[in-house]
Image (cartoon, rainbow, N blue to C red; front, side, top):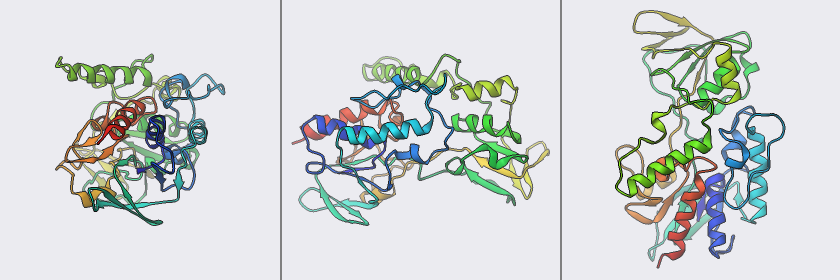
Length: 347
């Protein structure tokens, strides 16, 4: 049973199929969404990948070239690719099926409950990602204006003429700031000064660096630090343009919200109409709660993709803790291949 039909679930299905398992018979992919495309179908339309198409592909079939402009592909291009990928390999994803829980079943199996019936599986792969669990930090005070999270953002024109504070120091914050700053008066608030990657470093380079770090650690070599030493924000075209307009300046963290905005430790205050929280996501693992596998940090300890305390459960696509760059198009294939080997070679 594969839970989740986005990029991680599709990559897993590809390798299970290549190992000789028949989609719909030997394994099934369940997805809560009614349409293909995974998280990409719910992202804002102007979001771009961090790499060109030749370095943004799932295993087996390269993403068709993006020819609309000189930039990286837009979200709609990725959705089209994932839709065609699913059909190309006849992965038979069952859509509109929401998993409520995974429990211990009889005869050493796992019981999967959904809103379309119950299933029994010898192995369960959780590939539900993070998009359904947006995180907003708690601050003292209360803001009386509009607030939304990255997951709810759609287009810059919605904020035309407003005063907008964008909170967060990652890629989503930088790309949204770049867009909104063209039509609104923006302020960027980050916990630490934003760190920009060199212009020539994209998703491909980040994947290669993360992979090298993993190999070094597995061989007993020194920890290279991976991509953390380079920076956080990929300089896609829109972010470079914002730099050229001199708007990539961030204030430090504020201490509390006010009715009209925020206040900083030095007593200065900001009045805004809207706050956009680009503060990340948490893994969507609620369906695994009955297995009681979470550590104090909220994550499930893994050995590769395999849950350390439940070998019948695999997790893929949530980030580096389930495989290097496994939350990316180019990186998830490596984790999916490894888990398919473990599952098909299991006694």
